[in-house]
Every structure is written in structure tokens, then in C-alpha cells.
Length: 306
Image (cartoon, rainbow, N blue to C red; front, side):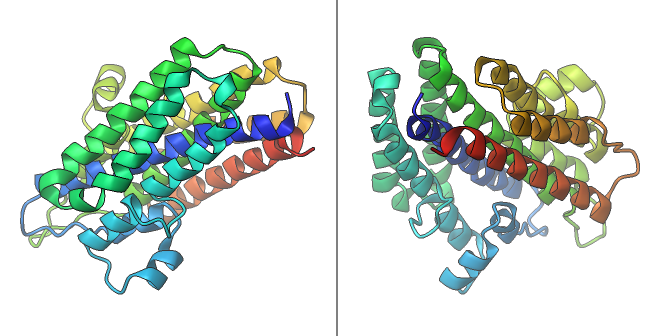
């Protein structure tokens, strides 16, 4: 397969997953803000920090309230990680890979992009936001279904899957990073830790699966362990890396890719979470994110550079 084609398939998978995950973050933070007592003010700026766009956001917006953050993450085309920008990049990557996919995929991605472009600005308020974001999620899941059941599972499909899995692993670590270092205090000093960690599970549609696997109360350590190390939940970091590992035998061998994958996977599997809180847990998440970045660079060097 030509390296340029493989590169576009890989990044199509990443950008589509990024648009979906950004919609999930906004949606769940909105739900969390309604679950908390009125006296508890939920911060929105941490979502900007979570996606690593604090500097750009500060340049573009004077305030950091809910409306500005939601607009920045949803429809601001000046933000390369917004839902609108991610779908734009996905469309551009798809232009040269359309022959590799069912025709309905191009139509669905176009519909999704123009829906966000046309309806987004009018749907940012809380009254319409949930329906708007749910529509994006439904469309993204529909595209994933088309790809899984209608696209030939050849080398191109493997590159697309690697991109989606690496993007998901990265976002899961970012969600854990943000939530594990931030509590929501009430005026009387009580903690809403369980509510916040439940929002983490909901952001990844993991709440029911967590209850079935873990069978214990929602708490930071058990949620982090599940989303980091569970080998069966598709959005956990370990599962995403294992899926990439299962793909590698279908591709030309590259020691650097295999080495970076195994190093990052071992880092994830060997984390001892008991007693790991605050700065130490944040440092661990940062190290895993660096490992994912190194894996991305190794994949790029091995397969996408002619």
C-alpha cells in the first residue's frame, strides 16, 4: 500500500474518533453540571486543558465560561481539535481513500460535517446542546458500524483501526488525567467524588460495563484501573494497545513500532494504583501519553514516510 494512502486512512480513523470523543466530553460535562447542587460551580476550562489547547484558547477568548469553552470545542474552526475541524480533516483524508471504503461512509461523513457546520452555532445553548451532541455521536457510531461490517478487512482497514485505537487510548488517558487531579468541592466541604468519577465512566459509555466487571462502588482507584488496564473494554487504554498489537502481524515487521508498543503496554499494565493520587497519578498519565506519542511517531516513520 502506498504510504500516502496508508497515512490518510490512519488519520481518518484518528480524526473521526477525535470528533466523537470531543462531543462526549462536552455532553458529559453538561450532564454533570446539572447533576451537581446549584451551589457547586463546575469549571469548564479544564476541558480545554484536557485537549492541550489552553494557549490557543487564551489567545482567542477573554473569558473561560461555559459558552466560550463549548463554542471553542464544538464549532470554532480556528481550533484544530474542535468537532468541526476534526470532521473537516476527516473529510480531507477521506477524499483520497474513498475507493477503499463503502460509498455510504463518504455520504455519512459529509452529512455529519454539514450538520455541525449548519446547526452547531444555534445548538450551543443547554436547551439544544444535548440533542445536537447526541446526533453527532449517533452518526459517528453509524460510520464505525459501516466500516466494521462493510469495509474489507485488509491492510487499509488495519491502518484505519490503528489510528482510531491510538486516538481512543490517548483520550482515555487525558480524561483520567483531568479528573484524577480535580475534585469538586461544595461550600460545606463535602466531596462529590463519586458523582465526578461516574461522569468519567459516562464520558466513555463505560458505566454499565464497569458495574458488571468491577461490582463495587464508584471510586477513583477502581475506575482508573478499569479504564487503564481492563483488557476487554474497547475504550480502555490496555485494550486499545492490544488491538494495535493484534494488527501488527498483518503489516510489514518494524522493530521500532513493536518496541514502542510493548514499552507503553507494559507501562500501562504495571501501574500500581493503590495510593497513587494527585501529582503522582498525573505524572503517570503524562508518561503514558508520552509513550502513545512515541508510538505514533514510530508508526509514522515505519509506514507513512516514503
